Image 1 (cartoon, rainbow, N blue to C red):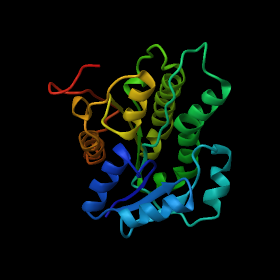
Image 2: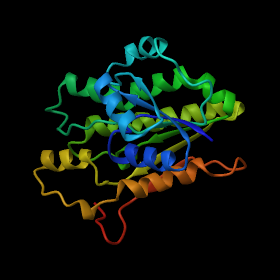
Image 3: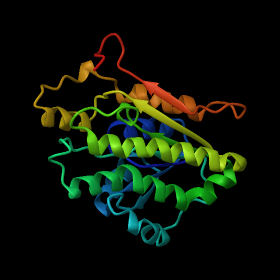
Length: 234
C-alpha cells in the first residue's frame, strides 16, 4: 500500500486523483485549508488522514505542519490545488499577484521542502499538476501563467537536485478541464460554460496515475493533456 499526500482533494482534478487512489486502497493524507474542510474530506474519503494548512499563507505552513502528525514516509506528493484570477497586466493588483503566487507556486515549494525527508526515505514521486498556461501565456492570464511558469521551473530544478536521492518529479500540463475553476474562468471571460467541451477531471487523474505507476526504470518528466476530438482545441 502506497502513501500519498494530496492538495486540492476537495474538488476537480484533486478529488478525482484522491478517489482513484482511495478506491485501490492506498493511504491518503489530504491537505485542507481549515478544520471544517478537513471534516468534509474525512467524510468523503473514509480512513484518510487530514492535515490543516492554508496554502494561501505559505509562511505559516512550517508552523501548521509542525503541530500535526505527519507520515513517516511518502510515496508521492501531489500538488493539485490552485487558484486563478484573470485580468490584464494593467489591471492586476499586487494583492492578486501575491495571492496567486502564494497558492500556485510558493506553497508547493514550501510543502515540498518540508516533506522531502519523507520522500527521500521511500524514493518517492512529486507530481505538479500544472497547466497549459505553464507553457504559454495568453492575454489576461498574466498572474496565473507566471505562477505556472514558475511551477515548471520549480519542478525542473527539483528533479535535477533530487535525482541522486531517487526522487522522481513529473509535471502534468492539462488543457481546459471541466472543474469548478473552469466555471469561474468562463464567468470572468463572460462566456457560456459547457462541461462537455473540456477534459474530464478523471482523464487527467488517469495521466497522473500513469506517471505514478511507471516502473522504477523510467521517469515521466512532462505530460501535456489536451481536449480530444469531442472537445475544443481552445
